[in-house]
Image (cartoon, rainbow, N blue to C red):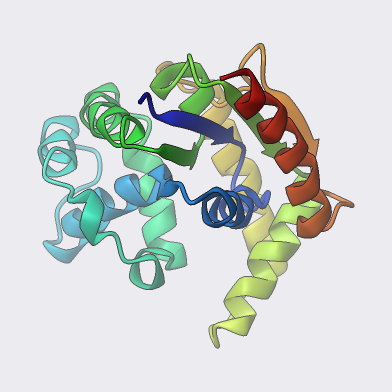
Length: 212
């Protein structure tokens, strides 16, 4: 039996993580938030006070990331996300983590991977590819609300600027830039509830499963 892979891409705070977890739970598939793999490598470097601009060093930490030990509650910290976005532009780091992600994608009976280059680089042959997006304003507001809800202080204008900067880095990096795969289905969640996005995704996935 071949693994059935669902590739979900999109910018930060577009809703792809929540949607991916819902899809994985519904179909009984294994889920990997590939962004956490970059966050894990960045956190390991931050914990040791190491510079984030050393590609060889960062790649070494990326190669040691344990996919079974990714703690979302710890790795979701805002500062870790900013650090991760800096090492994620490094080709050597991406090579290490993409190989690990591809091994994960082969797990049976199926997998859901979400990130920024799943449909274009990690799993270009995935039978279902979704690109989940939303306006920068909506995504900044969602991130702001998440931080406030966690009990931390937040400044909307600063978060909005960071969202735009991160988009710029992700979309214009030389290695695996953020962009929809040519055959990806676009889901704009700016004015769409997560339940509506889930229904739309499920109809696409059900149709693809029938063809397997």
